[in-house]
Amino acid sequence: MKNKITIALFAISFLGHAQEEALKERLIFYAPFDGDVQAQVAQGDANIYTALERKDLENANPGLQGSNVVHAKGKGRSGDALDFKRKGKPVVFYDASQNVAYSNTSWSGAVSFWLRLDPAKDLEPGYCDPIQITDVNYNDAALWVDFTKKNPRDFRLGVIGDLKQWNPENLGPDDNPEFEKRLVRVKTPPFGRDKWTHIVINFSKLGTDRAVSQLYVDGKLQGEVAGLKDSFTWSEEKAKILLGLSYIGLMDELSIYNQTLSPADIEKLNGLTSLNEILK
Image 1 (cartoon, one colour):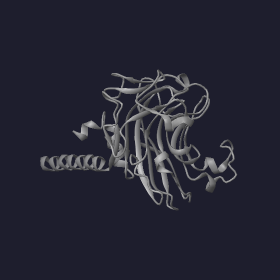
Image 2 (cartoon, rainbow, N blue to C red; image 1 turned 180 degrees about the vertical axis):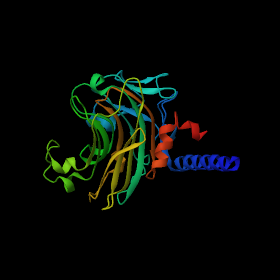
Image 3 (cartoon, one colour; image 1 turned 30 degrees about the vertical axis):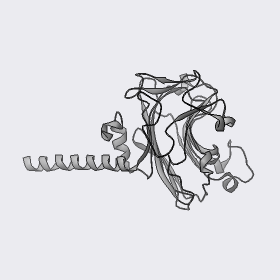
Image 4 (cartoon, rainbow, N blue to C red; image 1 turned 90 degrees about the vertical axis):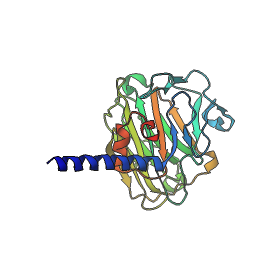
């Protein structure tokens, strides 16, 4: 019996180590916001930028500017965090070029981060995107999660291909079945001021007819979208990892991977206080 327990413990330890190695090998971008807002790991530009408004991203300055978004000492899941104080301008972002391993033929990867807020009490009226990754807009070759515009708020994942392909008449999103079929929608999502909630956007083979996108919340799969044939085309030098669009709350531990993550990988991430636990 003792030998069986020893073998089982060894197997658990081995699998845990294997998950850690898989995460480290696939990690291409990591911003823990501890001590600094510059990314700790980056394949491209590690700097965070602030633009006065969305249409002026090309004239952004490095670092955080103004008081809408601040580097919050000691408020993170581990160490520090970003604190989005109020809705409105300016806009903060990292460059996506090389930091998301984009491919226009078959793109796979994952985005992980933590949020802390009460959507019903903290958010102002209107849609809110904690993260949006695109070169143009939310409806044109974009990945994002958002909260819907009024209480009770749904939490949604959108992985949206080229606008000219899926929506050539450029119809609005409300009551548009083609838009809705590209979303994963979570009713009564488990957010709160007294807890951190873990989000993973998991995607594979974007730009092909085998594309799949998944939303995980606190390590649990909430739904997926598959079977669409959207192309996914960027001018990569213009693509941004936009943070906190109309969002009010805390964000921590932003990490991006160059391959789709397995359920075991996501479970491992969900159990970490900080990714630095396995990077050291």
